[in-house]
Length: 179
Image (cartoon, rainbow, N blue to C red):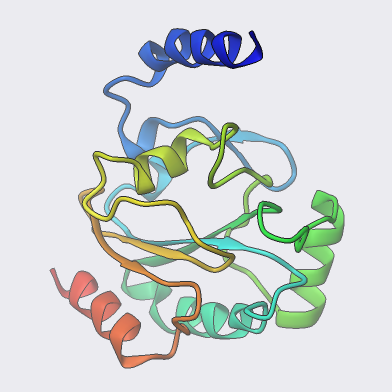
């Protein structure tokens, strides 16, 4: 019975997001303010599911360095805290913000904690990793990355272990910024 109720709720919710573009999906900032990605139209976006207690957490430093280096050229790194993998982001919004600021000097935008997979998957991640995505498939761990071009198209996906300073990721970002 629980399965059927969940299926019914999911099917009823689909029309609300049918045809919704990347920039229209409702989000919340880390401090709980309603927002969307609309303010980033025309920018190159690197969307990352982040966590504070993960082996990949040191990538915050590389993400911040990349953001600082390329933000004036139109790059925005967007962090989406996620606790879907091994309880590696258990903190509150305040704890997440403090951790990121104190340990890695993060200044790129952070959003409210969300689910990147499973039955409570956020619509943003349903769009990024769902069957209609050019790079479909569940996010496998923290620090998975999606690169979005200036027109809002998903143009690359990077595995969690791909560090921000790799030639693969940097090259894709630089190419996107040049277009």
